[in-house]
Image 1 (cartoon, rainbow, N blue to C red):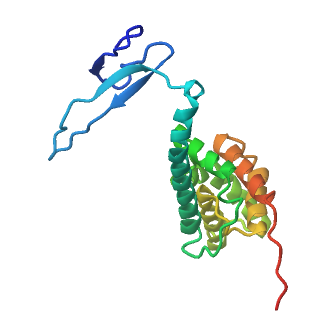
Image 2: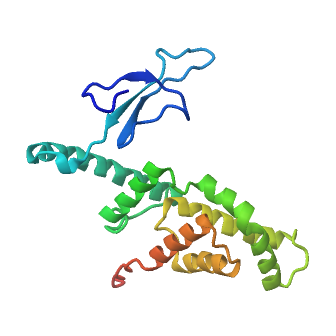
Image 3: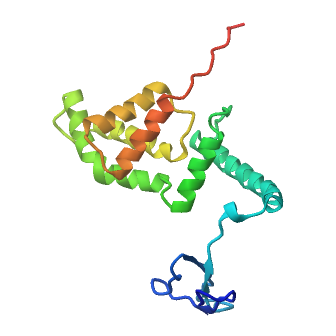
Length: 217
């Protein structure tokens, strides 16, 4: 790899070891081997200057615009897919807010950083961080001593399922359900990273403009 020359050396890529030079980024080309299919090539890396679109010419930006649109459309498709799957195949409409630039950017940010809250992550968090405190509160609310009571398990399963659905930010959740999940975070004092992200998401869902009700014809 080279920091000064306009030619940049290709080197073997070693995870955790191969680094980019200062002010550059590491471009990686990786290949994986399986028991039946060995990798076709060795994995490599190149330290290259970063690209800043601010330095691009107007003509280059004009040529880039259709590709950005295509990426945004693909992200919209993914957001709609998430809404559809979360509704268990019962999605009947999508609002402009659901597929707005803000939602697309939030989706792309999460994809890029790997911070997207998947259903698996949320369910794991629920079991590890929320279940015990919520069990106690449910027992108190129902005036039940036995934490293994089937009614407690039923309510826990309901909360677990609804929290898991937040991975897709479904428009199918009713306002009472959203408020119920928000309340669960408050009463259990769950303010860790995932809990804070879910609280922010729930607040955003509550603050969405309400659809106008149509006259019953």
